[in-house]
Length: 289
Image (cartoon, rainbow, N blue to C red; front, side, top):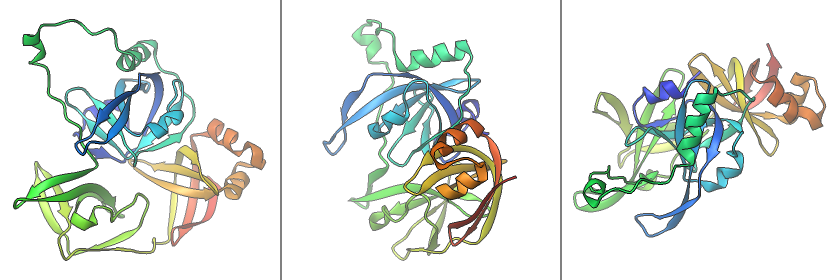
């Protein structure tokens, strides 16, 4: 499974890889102003796994109840930044799902707590202060200059049965993709920058919804969150993973428990192996293997 150590050794970019962490410390909420003059909140957190710790910048404070100190969660669809310090950025599209509890070594826990709850700042001279790293906030949807005209652009990551790739959505297509949708893209162009191959929309690009292909998914359940009709679970199979919505009656029957204890049983049993059958994106079977 992906780990903090592996993340720190990776490129700064958005990641969908599930990352299992324990929230060790929660810092004070602060207010900042965006480029368009809007006031928003930010909360720093210190999280850890069994080997390492890292800072989390929580820009979507509505998710704070899921990230209380002591909670064990799985994060996905987050952004990793390496500069000036290794940081996981949690935004509106980030998923925070519950998982089974685990212990963190004492030295790692102390480091994570110090990340969130900072010691009093050292008093330095203006000369030294001017040498500090310059920081800037990165928005999910950016405005860029193209031939003297401001246009919007947004980067998303998509995958099929073979690989995953970044797609730059331009202009009126910035809202054309939502997490979990099955889509068909036409008339894209291929780009290459810093050894990363990506795709980009054009004025002729069409983005259309399509049916999900029938599939049988087997793997290990590593996290869950409650939904209106049941549970969303993350199933991991080697280096691949998928989020699937399962009706509560299917989870109940597979775990052989009553409906009132399904969530408690899930949190205790994780991780466990399952086979999930889907047709047109709808789950048709869910069984332990």
